[in-house]
Structures are given as C-alpha cells and as structure tokens.
Length: 420
Image (cartoon, rainbow, N blue to C red; front, side, top):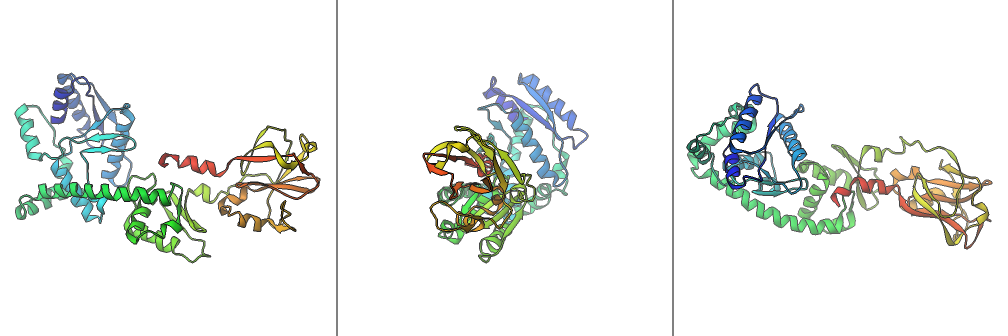
C-alpha cells in the first residue's frame, strides 16, 4: 500500500495496479476490494486477477501463478514494481543457504531484475519492515497483514517467527549484514556470468554441448557451465547432485555405453563427443514413427519436396540423374536394415549402416533415412546430412538431384531457438 501511494505521487500518469487473488484465503476477495478502493482514491487504474494455484509446494506454485499473471498483463516497455524489503531479502538468502544454494542463489533478489520475459524494480529492498510500517501509519491508510505470515508451517514464516528473534538477539545488525552479503554475491554472480558466457560460446548451444572443448575447462567451470546448460528453460538451476549425476552417469560413462539421464522434461544423451538435450518424442521418435514403408513419388525440376529426413529441392547439378526420370514414378523406401549401397565415387558396395555411421547421423534421426529406387535400381538415399548419390546407369553430367534445404534436425533447433 505504501508502494502504491508513492508510485501514484511520483508517476501519477504511468502507474497501474494489479491485485493477484490466489483464492487461497476467505478474505482474499475483500483485500482485492480494499486495493481497488485505495487505487480509486489515488486515481490509479487497478485490476483484480484471480488465479488458480496448482497442487504441490504451495509457496512455489502460488509464486508461479502470480508471475504468470503479471506477465499476462504487462505491456511492452512496462516495469513490474514490487515491495520486497530488506527482511524479505535477508530471509531469501538464509532460506537458500539452508537449501545448499550456490553464488547465484545467494545473490537473492536484485533491485533491478532484468529477465527475458519482464523487468522488475524493487525500490524498497534497502528499507526495513519497521520503516515501511511507520510510514504507512503516518500516511494513515489501511493495510493488511497476511495471516499466513505467522503460520510456521511455511518455511519463510518459520524463519520470520522463530529464527529471526534468536539471530537478532545475538547479532543486532544481522539483517543488514545478511542483506549486504546478497549484494556481494550479486557482484560475484556477475563475474561468473561473464566467464560462463565465454565458456558457453565455446562449448554449447541450447541443444548440444561439445565435450572435447568442455573437457579443457577447469572442474569448477565445467560444473558452472553444466549447471547453466541443464537449466534450459526451467526457472531454477538443477541441484548439485543432478549435475554430478550427469557428469558421472553420462559424460564419464564408458565410450560404448548407451548413456542417458532423464531429468524433468529433458533427456540428456551422449553421442560421440557431444552431449544432447532431447525431449521424450525426439529420443523415441523411431518407436513413434509413422513413415510408410513404400511411397510412390514423381519429381519435377525446381520442385521443393519434403521427406522424413528434411526438405529438399530438385536442382540441376554437375552430376545427377537423367532428365528422363523427371515426372516418372519413383519409389521411396523406408530403410529396413541390411541394405547395401554403391556410393558414387567409391569402390564396391558398402553396408548402408556403415555409411550412416561414417556420416555420424544421430541415432535418434536414423529412422528418417529413405532410399530412392527405380526399376529395382537404387538411385540414392535421403538422409539428414543430404542426398547420397548411388552409382547407377541413370547418372549423367548436368543431371538433377535433390539438394538439402533444411534437415529434420531444424525442427529441434526451432524448438530451442529461444535460448540462442
């Protein structure tokens, strides 16, 4: 309420208020009406947004619902202004310390918090709760103290009700000191972020991690990068134990091991000297594949075609197929296993499996490979790495062949492009 009053004084034409009703307490609707009434007195537009809180950790789920509502109503270039104060900051740091947080966790809340989805300003972060209450009483407006603030069932309320008095009795300036530590941790986190950014550019995209370059980093920088990379689009970084599990069970697994670790919605898989982040559908795409065993196709010059391995365009090449095959019915066969191919420019027939391995096509993409055939003659193979010409009587100078425009892997890249 004090924040609302001061924002109305300083930014009278730019301020809007929002009250999030979590519908968890019988008085929550009445409190919303009180906020609306005070906003009307201050001539500030106000909206009330009811949200549903999912089951689970009540504090965390309520916070998530609240911020989703904020994001829904924020307009471009608007700033979310919150009334967190110094005791909130000190409590946050201690609770994160008790949970085993690192530097980023102990940095707690920032006064200016620039996130991907919003910017938050916390102007009261250096003010004590006592100062805020005194000013509120001097201005003479009503305010509500949430009764759950005294419910020690919740960790933050326990910290406030049980622990705070004990600590302040022994260390009278504890709250200020703990809050100051959060600022020192913010400096440290900023330095680490600069190092992390450089390591990320060298080693990682959102989807994959180069283990050769990764191995050249110090152990501490490896853990830092792995923690940030595993986080992905989640709100919080994984626990220290999860980072260690990924290192021990996947990265350091035997070279011939099919090492996979499932964490939340992601599957982390090592192949060759790279670590990949996959969804369930990506990892098990072959089992869910609906690619027909046989398709009949007709191609024309300049045509763009889509096959399981990606998007290709029929173009003239230095070497390609005879124009007589344009418009003719061709067969597109799903790879069954055991096929052999006489690749153009190589001697003899090779197992198609060997060609796939040499091309380092990712195992979870191999089901997209299809074979182009005419009159029982293999013309070539569609793969995520391009079209592979087979030696045949239909090849000639200046002929045509499919050229890869975008492979099926581009779908995965688009899925992760938010981080790039």
